[in-house]
Image (cartoon, rainbow, N blue to C red; front, side, top):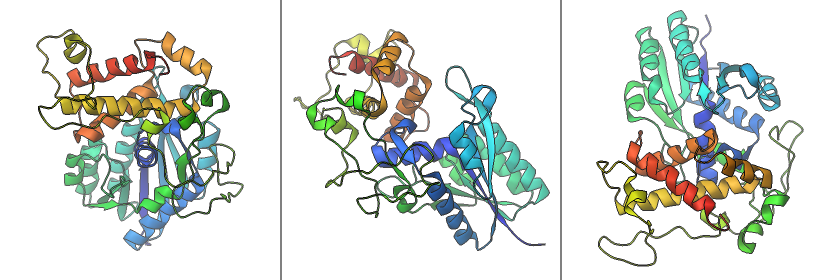
Length: 356
């Protein structure tokens, strides 16, 4: 019997981590992805690492249409060779449902049936730890794959999941840099930004020419755009027209400190909640500004009106990005409740400010 490897891709993790590497925030709408290029590179890496041919790549995501059915982008991904769509559904609040369960059930079933010799799991979700153990109990090797951050380290992978897996492979940064780029400004969004931000055109990161050559299949997410070459990639703080505050030395005051207007803004209505440190407050400010800047790249005037009409409820994709980004900066898998309160409150403060 011929030996094979398999690749399980947690798309939520992959795109959030890739977006963080490219834009500084995990908001998926801030990037455009060449899925054929990305899938081909992931398959090549799995086959190289294992020395075995790939049986199949399982693409785990939530269906973006009612009832968990695939949208046009997901349909096109499912048509790629050796790719199997495994879709959960999206709740009315924009939350993924059933995706982790599908990954876990497949890990257990494929381990029990010995369909392949080794499974590569591209995810960082701690909730998959027990499913990894179940597959291993049937003699299956389960190796983690992680997206690198800008320093080349594994981005947002649970320590518990790393401990339970057989190994951890950090992908080469070019896997992301060659296939993921910053989404360009919409015409109606550009007018609302400061001139320095509105003039920004972001090139495709990685070793490509300034004129992007895209195949017919290459740009499923949207039409091909020709980015303008520039010396460096702007940070979300530049796009927001505001510099992220520098963290001053302990015990010092200065214009770099984030100013919180009241005690209630810092600790919320629960006076027994622990007070956030200045370091945590600075990170909250940095995260909020980054997410708002990335969202503003594609947000229309109608999107802004809709956002403000939903206050105090933050749309699911924005809320997830805020929590994921803060978790990554704090290097903690779970963000404490009092920090979540501060994070969401500061988000609304910034978007409500003139020019926010």
